[in-house]
Length: 158
Image (tube, rainbow, N blue to C red; front, side):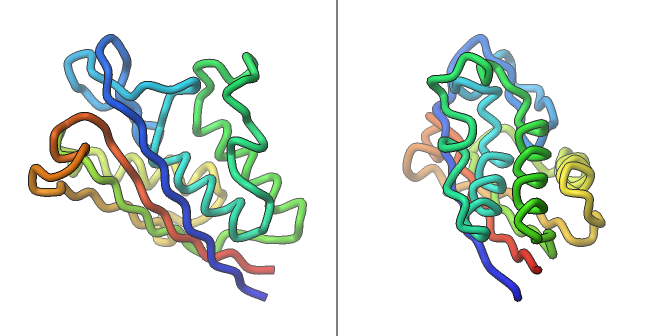
């Protein structure tokens, strides 16, 4: 049996925060994403897509922002926990395809490291992980550099 899941996440950019995407700290002059955890939109979108594919809800259900245990949580660790949840249901990850939407900073130099982190957390080959980045040509909240968003699509199999 195969199942497909889609995830989406967005966080506002703010001062005095690290910018972490795909488990990689991106140099960005102390501008990062606002959130209860490390606010890694890429890993949050992937986590939601996996949980959705397995019909297990979303990351807010499993790691609520009302729980201080997840304050400043490492989203790579949360992704590992999501992987364990879907494995407990008999699923394994076949592939991940994700897209980051950010006007700045340039993310291309960091994509390989993001893919490596995701593959390791999900215990799959890097060849099964695609991460892309795009701008929105100055349009919308990402184009105005107010936030960063991510979409992810996954295939899981039993």
